[in-house]
Amino acid sequence: MITVDVDLGERSYPIFIGQGLLNKAELIAPYLGKGRVVIVSNDVVAPLYMDKAKQLFPGQDVLDIVLPDGEAHKDLDAVSHIYNVLLAGKYDRNTLLIALGGGVVGDITGFAAATYLRGIDFIQIPTTLLAQVDSSVGGKTGVNHPLGKNMIGAFYQPLCVLADTDVLSTLPRREVDAGLAEVLKYGLIYDAEFFDWLEANSKGIGESDSALLAQTIRTCCEIKAEIVAKDERESGVRALLNFGHTFGHAIETASGYGNWLHGETVAMGMVMAADLSHKLGWIDLAVAQRIRAVLEENFGMPVLPPADISVEQYLDLMLSDKKAESGKIRFVLLKAIGEGVVDGDIEPSLLESTLTAGDNLCK
Ligand code: NAD
Ligand code: GLY
Image (cartoon, rainbow, N blue to C red; front, side):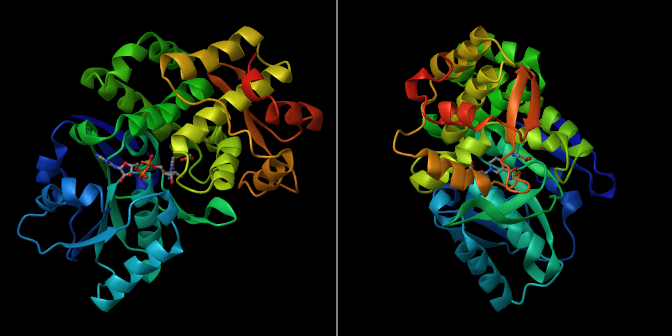
């Protein structure tokens, strides 16, 4: 097992990464208080892992809440359902919430924990690659609004993160690939050597070689922990973690939540951001082409955004992005592989040329 620490003073916590961690009740034991335990999951993950997760709390009567699966249900109704069950059962401030699932369950449960009785403890047990490398770490919690992705939420850190890599064996291939988009993001914005390593090992990673996946998860968690420790509430460097997301969130919202996977729209958004970085003269065409090729060819990701989203729709949705300031959309772009920057002064004609490039992105 590897432990990566997120250093946030008195809110610091460990991320445990390894095989068979759902059998290790001793990892969770130090975080149990005097209250009751409630595990929140969904109707895909619960049949697979709920019984096992309950064994992490021997001798306790653990309640489970099973939400409907999917991004389309990442909304205030889901949070309200959790409140209703907790209030009806007279769950007090000592209650410990456990998020057992991917990023959707993690974000919903974390937000319920942040707000129930003004805040109760919670633990993340991420079960997708995306959640193990990104969403379970760093304390962003929340839900979608029909007018925008992740628009309602709170920064609220878990007590610990337990990433059991064994659970990835049941994850559908398309979901693994969606997680790999967030993995490549870390290399592109922060760590050129990691990007080189991912490119060189794409075959083994694509075949879910367990040693390569464990190394991948560890590196991503180390990078994320470093960035979050520097800038927990995203007033600076943490914004880089949104690389590809300004375009990606617009595509996700315009297409209807759940039609494209979050990671897939991030892949499209990263190629759009690489294209715009090249049009601004910041990266060479060869670098932009390499980025598209690694995503599309080495990792088999969709990189072309749907053709039916108009420039006006993009601009409207991107102006609701949480990074937008004073009516200006702020983009995460690249000065080089491994060097992300945030910029809000983009020439409109260049932006429009990226939004309408279609198959000519990065060409
Ligand atoms: P998800 O939670 O919808 O999970 C993907 C699918 O896999 C679901 O159908 C789920 O039920 C299923 N699943 C989960 N674990 C499984 C397993 N072990 N075996 C079989 N099936 C399994 O999607 P996701 O990709 O994990 O997360 C995407 C969400 O995360 C988005 O809502 C995104 O906004 C959010 N996100 C949040 C942050 C953050 O910092 N909080 C960062 C990145 C993404
Ligand atoms: N996934 C973006 C962040 O945690 O900041």
